[in-house]
Image 1: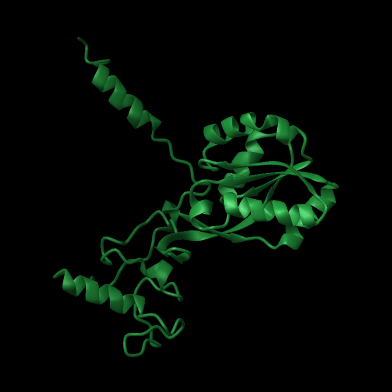
Image 2 (image 1 turned 180 degrees about the vertical axis):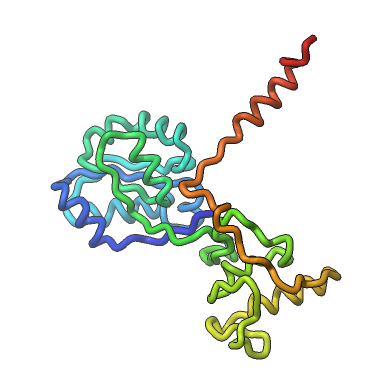
Length: 231
């Protein structure tokens, strides 16, 4: 999931002041931002209180099911069109993808209410860790499912570094060394560690990322319906 953190309210208010906005519509996200406790209903109510305390009028609010879903967000915005029309600007408490989806869906100025931090795992309620950099050249098959680049503070593909001591990381001293963990897990699985992982193919990273699964889906539908079989 995308981990987000609250944005400085002074910056959000600065965005609104530059625009001369006095009326604001608020949008959150029912997925990642709700799980992260940054953009669910409770956080929107806090945002409403902060804005109203600063003299702004909040014309309405909604927690979209999935803020980064273009079709769903457009539908949600249409349901609240009257409240959005009454606003001078929209503040979105979601990741950057959610903010851009909202900006695509409406003509009003849209401002981010959160900072997108990283793609991470939920360790426990309210505790998250970055686990994937979406590099497009995954090495988890070689490292027992532990990403060395993401979870090593030095981003080392091969390790450990010279600072590792007694199995612990020298940068984050309360954590085991990523490369020691990899070695231990591989041993537990009866696997051998490769001598050296080759440098990543950075050309594999999609930027800007865009993938379409539709051709495969359409081919499956055609096969299921017998289209193109010649019968």
